[in-house]
Structures are given as structure tokens and as C-alpha cells.
Length: 128
Image 1: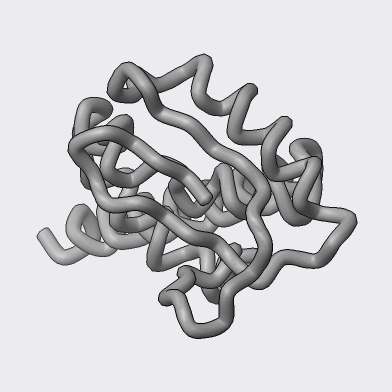
Image 2 (image 1 turned 180 degrees about the horizontal axis):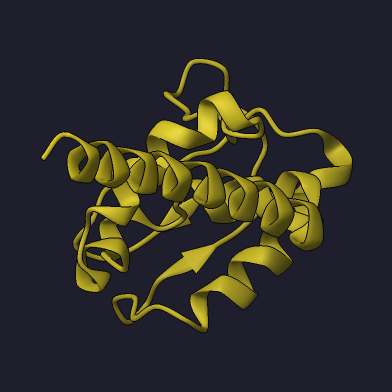
């Protein structure tokens, strides 16, 4: 459960038992790079099936990452660092599959989106 004063509480779950501690460590590390409201906390709580939860992440494959990366590349840095979005897709993926694998998958999706952009630009040049 992630509580940010002034923002909605985020409940992720259910999480695999071996992932909960990793999630806390990941949130600690990721929070060093974003300004969160004072008093923001995250903790492991029992899963309450009757309480609304967000899935930990569905963004672990290229097909699911590419639309997210497209959107993120179109945002300003401030939009990407909005405390309301913490934890974002990348942080959630990082917690579930590890920092190195999350980085590799995110990087590959960014490269795919960059290739799309370059291809569109080349088509535009050839159309002249």
C-alpha cells in the first residue's frame, strides 16, 4: 500500500510473497529520484480482496511496453515525474522482474519506438 498525502492511496496486489520485500526496496530506491509529498509511505499489508487493487504490472513484454513508452516519450520530464503516477509502470516492472531485466526490456521498447520514429521521418523525407 502506497500512501501519498494529497493523492489517492495505491494498493498493488496481489503480489507473489517473495516479491513484497523487493517491492519495498524498489520503491525506496525509485523514490530517491522523484519529489513525493512529505509523509509518503509504503508498506506491506495483507491483501484484502474486497478492497480495490491495481495489478502490480501487466507491462513486462515488448507488446505491452511499446504503447506506454510511446506515451512517455511524448511527455515532459515534469509529467513523467508526477507524484500521482508513483509507482509508474517502470518501477512496478522493476520490482517484479528485477532492475537489470526491467532496464533491458524498457531499453528495448525505447529502441523499437525510436526505430518507428526514424522510419516515419525517413518516409516523410522520401515523399518529398
